Length: 366
Image (cartoon, rainbow, N blue to C red; front, top):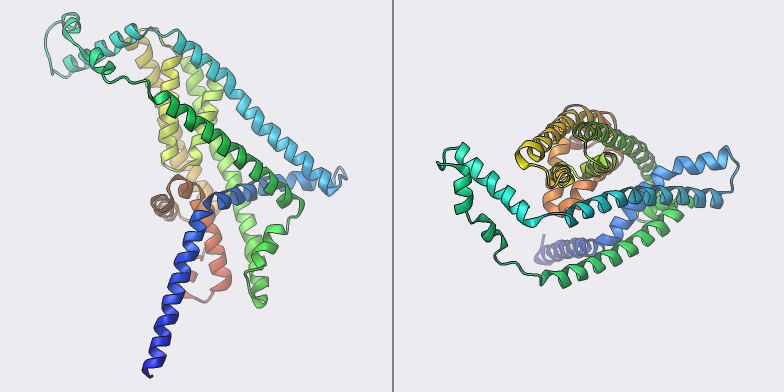
């Protein structure tokens, strides 16, 4: 091996490395488009049975079946959004009737009662309330300059959402109209002698992800029922809508339940604003918290193991590590797509590298 051969090898390795980096940068720059494609693929996966039913049972033309399916799914989405209008209206009414001075007094009293309970202070609580100035510290630095920034952020988010919604609907329409469109697009990057392997991989991925998304719907439904029961027992208005919203956050692994729990407890307390804090607000928040704990115990020890073991054929610990790594690399979006993406990678590896010892161990349950 002469110096020219070594130099060519080094240059080739550098070129490959640069190409990989540029390709990764390109994917990063078009991550929004990739997200639209992924969401559209999921919608197509969920809407495909409806299209087939309309075509085979009701003898609809393919295009008409797709249009009807899109209208049904869009109506369902808008109907879900409409459910939140009474909740927003009610919470706005509660906040408009809120007595700020009374709220400060309640917080101040709770703060001093907590200190007295743990022995951090002594004496009569009523006397300490008069001496305390916690409410003044809460109001320090109040600045209304955030309002224009908030409005700009809201307008930008609304425009981004509109573009995203249109893009997803447009892509979903063609995915539903031509079930082989995504498959044919992927086959462009596959050598001719490997096309059959890719087709088998896509069919396997569709089957696994169909069961996975069905399991996710079952998981959300179980949490929705538990949360609804807890909120109805406490007597929270719009309990069904709040339970649905908080259950929906569980789509985001690990972080979502925390966000949903905070929102549920906050909305519970704002539903009873004006009531006594220690005898009404705090007990009701505690009961809701117990319902949250029960829901998460059922989810962690029943729903998730069932979904991961029967749908994507992966061990819960394996899934946990994948979600954590994806979250560290790509944030919340990475956590959401970690399981479907990991499942697709495993299927492709098994189909193309079936003889590799590592791949054999990794995909032995598929």
